Length: 61
Image (cartoon, rainbow, N blue to C red; front, top):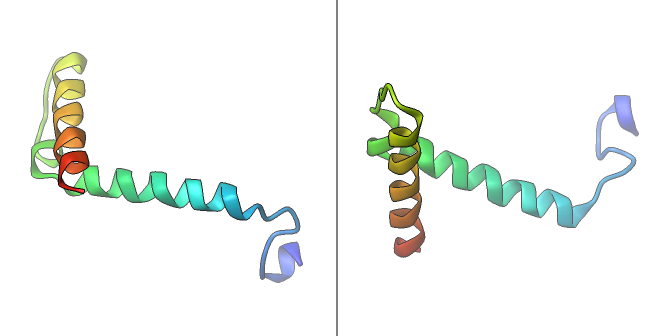
């Protein structure tokens, strides 16, 4: 199949499921207002904001 479309020859269903989970989590973080509107000068401050948003998302699910 490969270049003709369809599934790639080495399609791994479990790996795809994990990738999908990670992509959905990143998408949720992007939509969090606290993360999307931050323009911090310091990396550790931004990391704290992302961590707090991830905790809120995790606790709500």
